[in-house]
Length: 197
Ligand SMILES: C[S@@+](CC[C@H](N)C(=O)[O-])C[C@H]1O[C@@H](n2cnc3c(N)ncnc32)[C@H](O)[C@@H]1O
Image 1 (cartoon, rainbow, N blue to C red):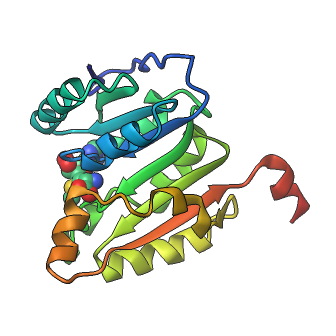
Image 2 (cartoon, rainbow, N blue to C red):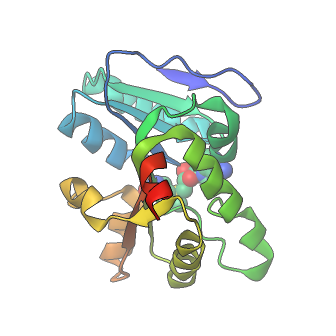
Image 3 (cartoon, rainbow, N blue to C red):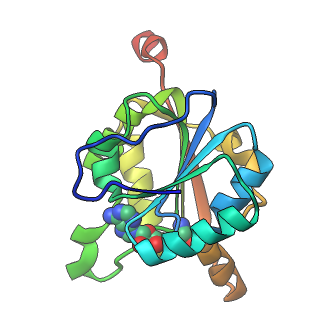
């Protein structure tokens, strides 16, 4: 099913029977979503994007594969993080190959910025994981700088070792062209571990 959240203050209804929730933010054509849902049938997999056409095509694939654990959200990533997702509701967020807007005049349209990363803190459960990837070296370096300045995050490369073989549609395209795609994984520190520092 596709839940349309754009221009809405409503929160999506998340089925309570799943103890672990993954979110593929900006899922695009959804290869990663489908693989994740197949690999972890006991986890809820949310996949969000603003492009309704892509979500409709992905929804057909979800139905064809009879994947019961997927919910598609038509939602803008910033709004999802700021107020549409329930607080502390997500175990692992994947933002994979987001548009890098490489030209100077487009940089303001980038999804990943410090304010956005801070809003993800609201939706991740304590100890939850943020997984990012990009083919764009300057964007990647910006992320490293931003992330190192956020005291509530710590790097945990092993937190994505269980899915390192799953490639997104865009990652496959970049790899086919010989362009490496780099990944980062960070953990939201629990309140206790923040106090210990
Ligand atoms: C470059 S594609 C990557 C898709 C997929 N993650 C992959 O790696 O194949 C970026 C996707 O993010 C979506 N997107 C861009 N900005 C967004 C935003 N602010 N909110 C939600 N989706 C967004 C686009 O519609 C597009 O499907």
